[in-house]
Length: 254
Length: 359
Ligand SMILES: Cc1cc2nc3c(=O)[nH]c(=O)nc-3n(C[C@H](O)[C@H](O)[C@H](O)COP(=O)(O)OP(=O)(O)OC[C@H]3O[C@@H](n4cnc5c(N)ncnc54)[C@H](O)[C@@H]3O)c2cc1C
Ligand code: SF4
Ligand code: SF4
Image 1 (tube, chains in turn yellow, orange):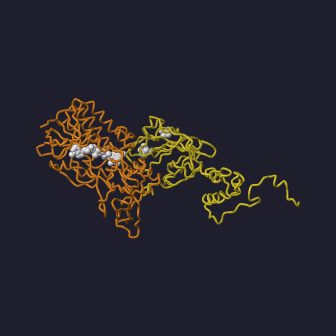
Image 2 (spheres, chains in turn red, yellow):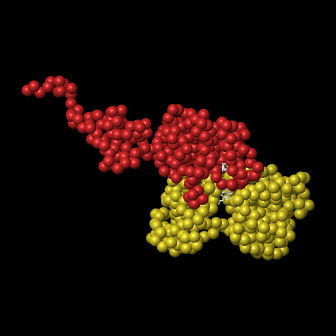
Image 3 (tube, rainbow over the protein chains, first blue to last red):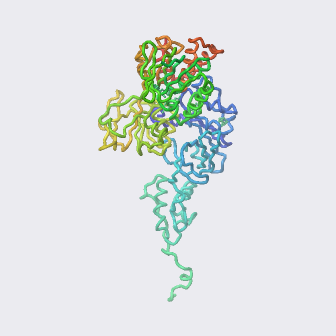
């Protein structure tokens, strides 16, 4: 429970989540401030009247999602750093999550980081698409991450280290990185063979000796399966790359 | 003997605010601070503060200290600031004694505002004297005043606002916080602070306490254990946490020695952190001309400390015949701000405590 651990419950979160319809329309503020405390800058900083008037300074913020433009002014004014901007209109598959981040070094725009959930557990890989750090933000930079849409209401922090590093090669021959592999798994490719066909992983000089096991491990983890239950790839000759000429020449005796 | 109209002891948010409002009313003020700088706790607070605009919400504590000092600078001609100056005694005849750079100074003010803040509570467990075990205040001073990293792996004891905020600042400084533990079953600090630390992956373990500190020359490991509803250790729940720093942040108590010395009526109010002076609606103690403001009057927040300071300064000046032009409005505004800050569930405890000490 929030009171014991600092982690809000599903019900807590449901109570502050804008509808899917609203989220898909464009940026919107999600305010995760669940306790009555003497604090009101979210309300006083919103120029669009999107946060219901605080009759009492201890009121909890209530967002009128239709009025909220997702401008982010409240994000940098909230001393609790409990406001996030979610934009599910960002692309077909990805949502934008804007997170206040008061740490150095700041990640570079374009770099990849590890997105974390409200418990600080790694959720997925995220790309840093923008860093806002203007003077009016008073040293509370806001980092915009792109994450798969289904994680928009889960990702609330990040680690600058790229655990799911795209830079880590799973298949060195055909240059498939961990990040690309995870993207493929997310897109629904669920066996080593499917992944081989779409990415060529395992079709290079080593013929899968490096990547086969790694891909299976990753798949097992992502689909919650035991390694021993994972289907094996189909093995076909040749077991090493050979020149086509060698085949064309045929066998002397043929 | 030095003379002044209003002596203010302590240059934290409460003392600074008292100095501003007293000087604005027209009184001559001497502000006495034991540190080499003004600002008190604010100087170490790099995070944004809560409250409303009037208490500088969303502004970082350290910047609020600067804002208050700028306000005070407007009344330069009426304000004397003494830093590195500790008030070491207040006597029944109203004389203050001060130590400044090894010099002993006597001062006779006509009114005194005591705004000395608070001191940290400590815990008893085996080896609690081992190097590496600090109060949260010391860790903050090392880090934010002197720029020294206190260690590499910290166990934070106490999940009140201070424990939560100092943990956050430690992480900002690149120190790993292994866990935050608290004997209470619930997190005492604001939950937004707790959530922001939890999402960095730091576990917050409520109903846990320190059982033992281990180490050869300095702290290496801490054994913690779980507590039942009666705060009794549950056997078999011990676990070891490797840490070279343990940071104790289990609450503050009002720093009221000077008020005891001079003979103010005091009473023990757990809701306000310990022994506190009785006071009236103008922040005046049982002794005429002795006012209080801020944490020494009851552990609360900088927001309320500033408002209490304003009120005390205003009333102390009025007592000397310096009535601010819009005195009544200003006084009412202070009271309204205090009421509003204390009106929610977090303020319930404070109000309960105050009801025991306010005449
Ligand atoms: C880590 C931390 C985080 C906090 N965060 C917040 C927050 O987010 N929002 C908020 O509103 N509040 C916050 N607070 C609380 C706030 O800092 C205090 O409530 C506030 O500083 C109290 O003000 P004060 O002026 O009474 O005391 P202090 O700030 O403690 O100032 C007292 C001053 O008196 C001086 N002094 C003491 N004795 C003597 C003497 N004998 N002679 C001369 N000088 C003396 C001291 O050196 C000190 O400068 C936080 C506190 C801490 C420790
Ligand atoms: S994002 Fe902008 S419009 Fe929306 S609540 Fe925050 S300040 Fe108001
Ligand atoms: S500013 Fe942030 S912490 Fe304060 S009430 Fe609003 S959402 Fe909560």
